[in-house]
Image 1 (tube, rainbow over the protein chains, first blue to last red):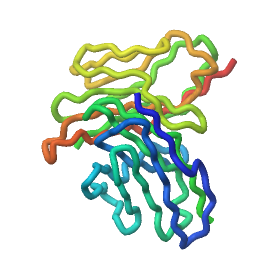
Image 2 (image 1 turned 90 degrees about the horizontal axis):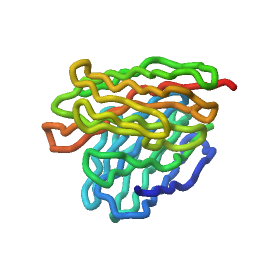
Image 3 (image 1 turned 90 degrees about the vertical axis):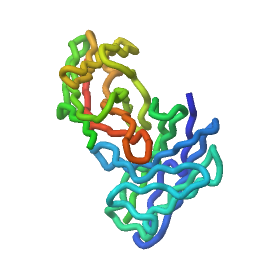
Image 4 (image 1 turned 135 degrees about the vertical axis):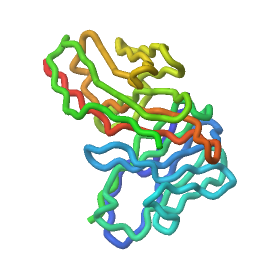
Length: 114
Length: 116
C-alpha cells in the first residue's frame, strides 16, 4: 500500500496570504486527489490531479483559489490562495494505485487562518 | 449522481457492546464499496471493502456485506473496544459514464465513542 506524507502538518496563517501544501508518495501513482475536511464534517473533493495534465476541479472550487501542480508521479502540491478564516480546515491528499480501488490518505494538513 | 448516506452520530457504546453503523448508497453501475476509519489526528485508512454483490469485507473484527437488493453496506462488530473510538466513513467508487473516471463518493462519517 502507498505511504503518503504531507507538509506542513499544521500551520497558522494570516488572512490574505497563501500556503502551499506538499504531498509526497512512496510509489508512482496515476491519480491523486485533494480533499478538504472541515471540523466534524465529511470529506469534500477539491480536485483530481493526473500527472502531465491540468487538474480537474469539483463544483465550487476554482484554479485561481486552489492551484495544483503535479510535476511527476510521486508528488503534488495544493496552494490555498488569498486565505480567509473560512479556509480553516484539514486538507488531505489521497492516491489510488488501481483505478476505482482503495484510496490511501496522507495524515492531513491542519490549517488555521486568522 | 452517486450518493452515500450514513447514520448520524455520535454513536456511544460501552466496551464489548455490539456495533452497527448503517450505510446505504445510490449509484450507477456496479460500485465498489468501502469503509474507512479515521482515528483522532490522523488521515483516513481503509478498514474493509467489497467489490461485488454478496461479498463480505472483514478486518479487525469488523464486517460489512454488500447488499445490492437493499443498496446497503452496514458496518458491524460483535464486541467493540475503547480503541475502536474513531470516525467511520462509508464510501463508494463507480465508473462514471462521462470521462471514464472513478469519482469517489464519501458519506458524512459517523463518530463512534466507546466507554470503558
